[in-house]
Image 1: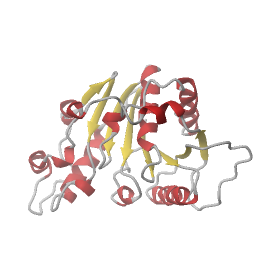
Image 2 (image 1 turned 45 degrees about the horizontal axis):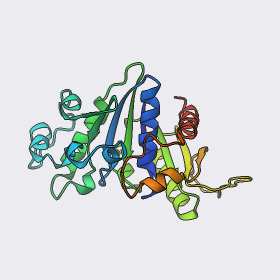
Image 3 (image 1 turned 90 degrees about the vertical axis):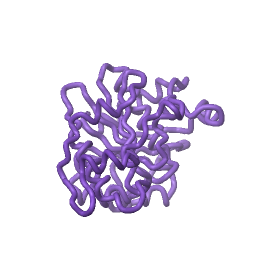
Image 4 (image 1 turned 120 degrees about the vertical axis):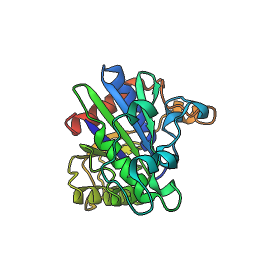
Length: 249
């Protein structure tokens, strides 16, 4: 199953991606992780140092030219069969690919880079007990480029505020126009949610899970980028199970 994780910047989508991947890996699944965000912080969230994180695919101009072409002649179905194993970094039993996003790819190569990213995502064939989790660029621009068309479901992360929820609703709406109707909303850093009533926003996915602020994560964030191995593991595992169940996973 392929899942994309989206949301407004700073809402915790990269953290949730890492928690979901770790949960799936510990339950015996084979997990591919794809960092498709300009910030490229998924490796750090998994505990990797900067020199251990793979270089983003969108910055490899030579490879893009080799597989996709240049000077106006773009191969929309490039050969990518060898790239996942060649470009990935293994971490905690999972495989991490750093794609980056065309927003940071530099002038002149956005179309070619995007074609390669889409082909690579589509190529990651899922067999039994295999998963792909894609940490998307913050906001909604990535949806306009159609880079999520090859995924099976979308997780939208939001904080408990109107602006964040409005972005979540816009993401949900745009994903629906791409035919991506399997969606789930995760409310992060939420307080007491007794009697919670979310605003009626067109496109807002159904609420799948609510996660409170994690004191241990807030205490750690100034000394480490890792979001794994927290004392709230039981809570996080329960959250991950709820989200995956909401998506039929």
